[in-house]
Length: 373
Image (cartoon, rainbow, N blue to C red; front, side, top):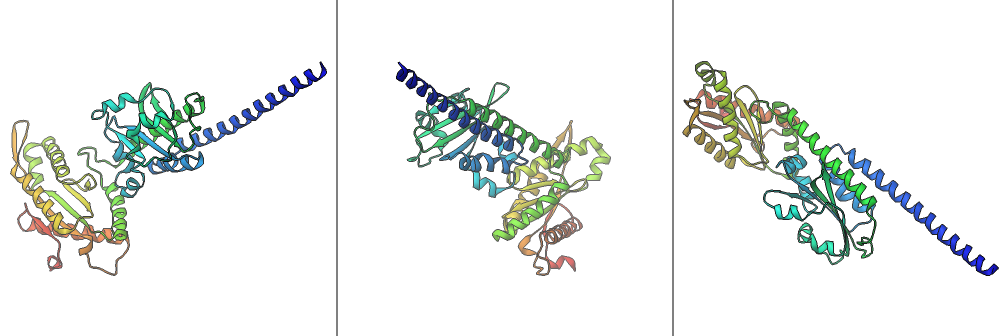
């Protein structure tokens, strides 16, 4: 009888020790998840958020891989996350899947509203693997990202341990992580949208001069580092004062908005279009030499001059003058800083613009030293 009671007590103590050990493990795990969650919520840039979710999460939680899917409802996620940062786009492109809900409605409909765990998850959501070689992928957890009962994305955690994620496992920790991730992404995107508003010209929706002056230095530094050329061009609306005086400032505003729209149709998404003055716009074309940029400029000039612009029944003929130069054409060894080169680049392009207007307008002029004579 005494032995039986002793054995029962020993079993109870063992169960209690196991429960305490599990409780301590869970407490530690909860602390790690909460600490990481607060870090991602505190991210101050898309690059930092991507680093937390796609790099540090993999290391801290001993995962084989992490893939983030974001549903691009506003068609601006790629721009907000990467902007003109091609380096970040290259680093994270295989682990960040931006889902167009209109083009991939079938894929969006397949995302669950509750965490999915197990070996089958790898097969069920293989479209997220992006043609990876997954011989070491043994189990996975797909965590839906929800905001206001709407799926905004998913976090795909992949392990090389077949027992890491099982259908029978509890998901409380993972659900907390998915909630904090969803909040962090929403905050990050909204912060970027607010920044963009501060960098945009309110009338034309081109970037403003402040943004251009910041970006051009970054682009020059990158061009120097990669040994790429960069072309800068000024575009000025010819006789714009006559438009305002004859038709009114409201029509003048519509003309400027239309010019920006036409510029954007002729350049790439990675090019920087900014309103630099009243009717003057500046464009930076990274990794573009003067020959290619000249073709773009002449095409733009012809498109604008050949179109009959109609506003409220009034038809206008609009032309533009364009002056341009490139980074590799500056040829000034005494100036080698991004700030100094940006000043020179804008000065030479502006000189070329002045010559284009002086020589009759509606033309493209490439800067050369002859213009200074």
